[in-house]
Structures are given as C-alpha cells and as structure tokens.
Length: 292
Length: 306
Image (cartoon, rainbow over all chains, first blue to last red; front, side, top):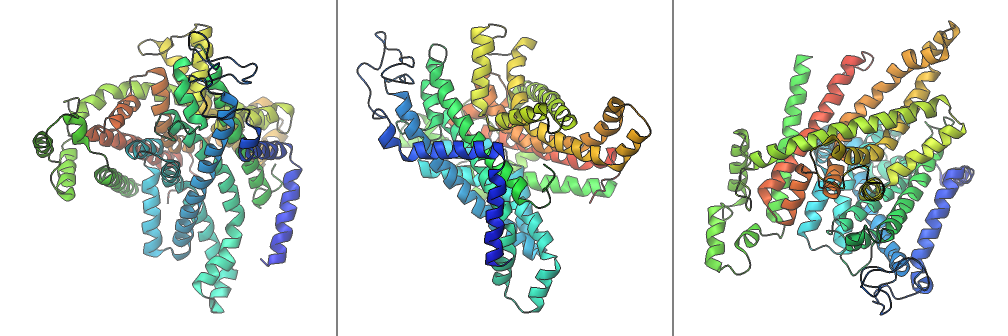
C-alpha cells in the first residue's frame, strides 16, 4: 500500500464513517466529553476539592440538584458537577493510556507470533492462551489492591489484563498475511524482516488496530470505573467517575443521583467509544463491507 | 477423537499449572505482607518471625510453590491465614451459591440476548432492528455495578418487589441474575443477529422458502438451529468475563459466593484463598473453552476439530 493510497483510503473511510448516524452520535459524544475534560478548569463552576459551607443540609446530608450546585453536592459538600468534569480527565487519561499500552503489547506479541510462527510463536500464543484463562477482573482487583494505586499503576494494571484480545486478533491476521504471495515476493526480493513487518504487514493491520484501539477504550474505561468503585482504583480526593460512586454509595438510597449521574457518565463514555469503534470496524474491515 | 480429547486435557492442565505459577509468583513478589495482617500492628518482631516460620513463608519461592503444588494434587489448597479453615472447605461452602447465580445469569443472558438477536435479524434494517442494536450497545457499555445498583434501587428500594440483598429464596436470585443477564445480553444479541443474517442468506434457506414452507417454519426449524451454533461456542468463552462480573454483582447484592470470598480475602491479603478462588475461576474458564471446542464439533459436523 503506497502512502498516497493509504491517505486516500483513510479519507474515504472517514467519509463513510461520517455517513453513519450512530457513528456520528458516538463521535459527537466523544468530542463533548473530551472537550469537557480539557476545559474543566474553565467550565467547572466550583473547585472540585472545595467542601462548601452551604453544600450540605442542616443534618449534614448531600444537597439535591438545583442552584447553585447544578447537579447537587456529594457527602462532603463538594459540587458534583465540578467533580464530574475533573473526573472525566481521570477516566479519559486512564482509558487512553491503559488502552495504548495494551494495544502495543498485544500488537507486538500478535505480530511476532503470527509472522515467525515456530517455537517462538507457539510460546507466545500459549502464553496468550494462559492469560485468557485468568479471571481478568479478579487479577486486576488483586494487583490494584496490593499496590497503593496511583493513576499510573491503575492504568498499567488494566493494560496488563487487556492486551490478550488484541494479541489474538493481530496474530490471526498476521498469520494470514504472512502466507500471502506479496509477502513471499518481498522475502524473495531480499527485503529485511523489520522492513516486511513494519512496511508491509503493519500497514495492513492498521485498520484492525484502530478498531480494537477504539473499542478497547470502552473496556478500559469500564474497568477503571469498576476498580475505583471497589475502592482499589484511583484514590480520593482525586475524582474519577468510579470513585465518586464509591465515596457516595452510603447515600445510595437517600441521594441516588450521587450514584446514577456518574454512572450515567461512565455509560455514555463507554457507549461513545463503542459506537465509533463498531462503525470503524464496518468501514475499515473489508471482509465486512456491504454487510451492514 | 479420544487422542484429541486427551491432548486438549493435557493442554488445559498445563494452562492451569501456568495460571497457578503466575498467580503464586505475583503474590510472592508483590509488596504485600500477609504476616503483618495476621500479627496485627502491635506484634513484636519475634511474633512476626514466628508466624512467618509457622506458615512456611520464610522458605524460598521454589520450596513454597512446590509445597503448594504437592498439596493441590491431594486436593489441598492450604489453610486460610485468617479464617483458620481449609481453603477447599471455604470454597466448597461458597461454590453452590456462585454456580446457581452463574446458571441463572447465563440463562438470563441467553434468553434476552438470543431473542433480541433473532428479532433484529428477521426485521433487519427496520426500526426494531435499529433500536435493538442500540440497546445492545448500551448493555455492553454499562458498568456492572451501575446496572446492579439501578435494578436494586428501582425494584428493591422503590418498588419493594424483591429483597435488597441476601440469599436463600428464588426472589433473592432475580435481581443479581437479571443484572448479569442484561450485561451479557448485548454481546449475544449481536452475535446471534449476524449469525442469523448469514444463515438466512444461505442457499438451503432459499430452497426451503422456494419449496413453499411458511416463513415462521423456515426461521424456527431451519435457520435458528444453524444460527445458534456459533453462539453456543461463545458461552464457553464468555465464562471468563462472567467470572469477573460475579465479583462485582455478588458484592452489590450481598450474594455469599466465591466472588465475595475472594474480595474479602484480597482486602486482608489472605493469599491461600486468593490462590484458591483464582484457580477455581481459571478451571471454570478452561472448562468452558474445552466444552466450546469439543462439544460444538459434535453438534455440528461441518466444524472439524483441529
């Protein structure tokens, strides 16, 4: 694939993407959430860490949504909207980072195993099988609970349990590509292995990587929320959507908005990336084209 | 066939061995000291050393691991550090509850997911299809604990139809099983839909229609049994995701299964229990994959076993 063809392919894929209503909805949601996260210091009505004197009722309960705290306050009298906006940063940073690491590990393992096959491929893929047999969430909870988690550790733990799927997909595709004639031709012409891998195979894998990268953000965002909800993820007072629910769940019955507003935010973020990822798969995966 | 089953069993055993090794290794190298948890904060260094020696934690890694493995072969998973009971006993006491929840959860996700998929495939491209597929996106994007808390809030707290949590009667089972069912349904709905669409395009379906068979008969008798096969293979693979969901769902609903056991053990660094539950979950996952690989070719001769 030449560079010009690749660019033309990408721009036509992008145009096809824009024609899908659900993909547009997903993209719009992603833009809104990312925008809100970046602009948090400008648009947040209050300091997310400030415990407002008038932020609790006389008996010390959180305030329901209204003025001046639009989405109400949390158990410490902090403004929920401001915490949500800053929490979006945490969720997105972890989601993107963990997913990036997982994608790199998965691609490297899948590519190596798929191209070289033999004993190296066998070892790598058996290791991948082994990781598939791990109860991922249990492993993540365990790791996160033992390390006193910072944002970076949470991201790393999530990446460690999330690369497996990518490795398998990349492996299958690379195995198929490596057996194709144009790769055999390159090899006969004397192209070096790195050249074949990175100039000829990797570009063909890009659509797959983009699709799995986008879908993977949903998974990592959900995993981060779950870990933080269990109290082993991002630690308060740093707000993350999961730990807002964790902190406030004692008020679950009397102040349900403290659980369901952040819960809805997590859902929307995961949904947005799923919508975009799924549409990308339809647009980029030639075997699926035209099958709706 | 016998040779093949044998080979797959050996492979599965090796995978479990690998899982046990990695888990044991991680728990060994991680900066968590179970002895401190047992001894308490005010313990003297002498007490700490004694406990460490008693539990054999002063031994090198290889010795500890081979001891653990030797125990495993005799069905002995060690003793819980804090509960002073055999891990096997603890897990066996909790396992029925988890298996019940799993069975109910899988039944729920299949029931919801397959119906969604079939309906979407039949009315492909229509409003029903679009809204069902949108729903499936929402269910796969929903965090487990949020769905669990939402069902709890609406049906237990507000409407009072079901108990808020606990275990014992069929009513206790409904909300946790429904949570797992809703979360898994979107995944099955999508697989079922595409599988069904593919089958409906096949020549034998056209032939059946051409013979003048009723549409409903073609769908239910000809298409459905064929379309359902790839979905069955997914159940085995799905068990891994399921085992994770169970930790969260059991926690929210106070369901006394192995998920809760694991969660409590993790908080107290009770390593033998963490090891035990991880291995039991890994067994379930491996078994699921094995069944997917071995059973599906039996039902469907078109799929050859490699």
